[in-house]
Length: 137
Image 1 (spheres, helix red, strand yellow):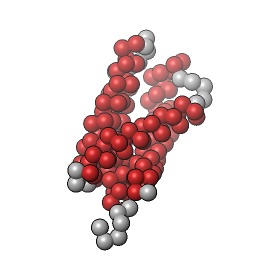
Image 2: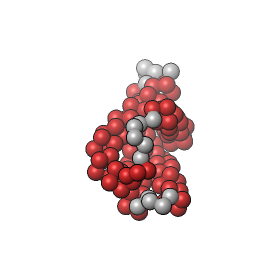
Image 3: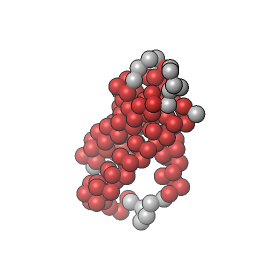
């Protein structure tokens, strides 16, 4: 049950942060820069698959190793930041390498965002882990 609460903590934090980011930045950053590459609407199946997989990745590769090694939110945030930087850079730089239109500034901003959001969500997961500890532990 503790891991479920940890996953929910990471998922809630990442979901809220990403929803805020996308509602604020879609019209300002992505739409002007990427225009015709964008789908006419959100594809919920693909978005849902991404969030399920990415949150699970943050729990397994950032939060779990941090808390099992005795670390707390800061250790989880550092691991989450690294994972976020690698994951978002993989996506953005692959697009930059293969698509005719993928501006450098979009990559830089998106990688910074992914690093921050992943770090913050991982810290939230470590806090959820701590709060879900058995009483007296």
